[in-house]
Image 1 (cartoon, rainbow, N blue to C red):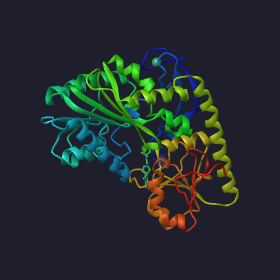
Image 2 (cartoon, rainbow, N blue to C red):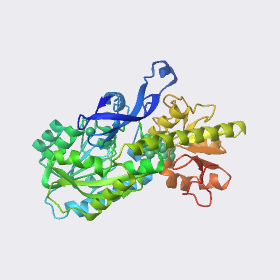
Image 3 (spheres, rainbow, N blue to C red):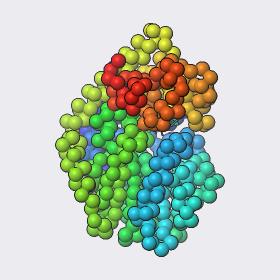
Image 4 (cartoon, rainbow, N blue to C red):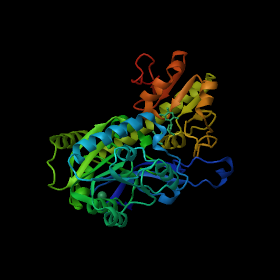
Length: 418
Ligand code: TYD
Ligand code: ZN
């Protein structure tokens, strides 16, 4: 039994995916022999209800000078962050004198670029040197380090307290959440806010999107499991806004307790979580059954396609796909290659399953009959991009929320089990 990373209570495991490689560990053929594997297991804390991984991979093995993920690889995400930046600026920085914006996990500067262009003081904190360099190259001020109490103190010393702290798809990655929130609490000006987004546990359960579970995602947040943790740091959620990105995310706005009025939508969402059972362990036992059924349906469909002689390639070498390929046993005999626009992933093998990652040009030059949409969270963007291929008879196979083909006439609705 492992201890909760948040409250030290016992964590009850509810789903074990077996040995998994590093989710973002795309590798060269000569690295296959030394590829590291560790059990991927997720559990529920009976003390504070936090859903979390029970075994952790060393952060240095995941976030390093060769971190493969660049925020700018999705044009639509760029627009999403521009909208977030504009909204946060209008809502929280209006009238502030020479405000400071700090972003935790600022990646290649896609978000902070919006503030830099507007001449607003900003600072990115990013531990992966290669993506941080891309941010600095475009003029976004960045420190290459992990965020915690000490970094927060160093920022305050050099720049003063922050009016706005941003963190998208990063807090759920940090095992020492307590240290981060203590840092945020020190960093935030009295009326300052933390705006953060992460995949939403409510969506993961509702859509059986088990591929959100991988080594980098240590925590699976909902309002209910964040509340007690934030309260320990004198912080509270003042707004919560569901987002369509990353397959269903929540945007939380957090402030020093009492500093801002709490939006009534916060209580409404908490009530919805109670009704959905998100704070009860039984919900996760049912989730495991749904995950096993999803795996069996996907494997059956891929085997049927192989028997029919249909060539299937993967679309989007996502971190999420590492959970799917390894849990379902999707090796190159089922999915011959994965197309991806990220240059650092191309020419490599996918972690564990060792499916070759190829440039998008290959997809265009030699279109497959079926593409397994690993980047299902970008479905609308990708369906628009591949309209011609779809018109020519190409088909997208998806597994979220159910295993099925994307209907050509209603591209956003996955058809039920084929
Ligand atoms: P992402 O959505 O960040 O998923 P994860 O967090 O699970 O890694 O990654 C999307 C991947 O899909 C990224 O490697 C870029 C790739 N991609 C394409 O190849 N083509 C596209 O049109 C889009 C939108 C993404
Ligand atoms: Zn706990």
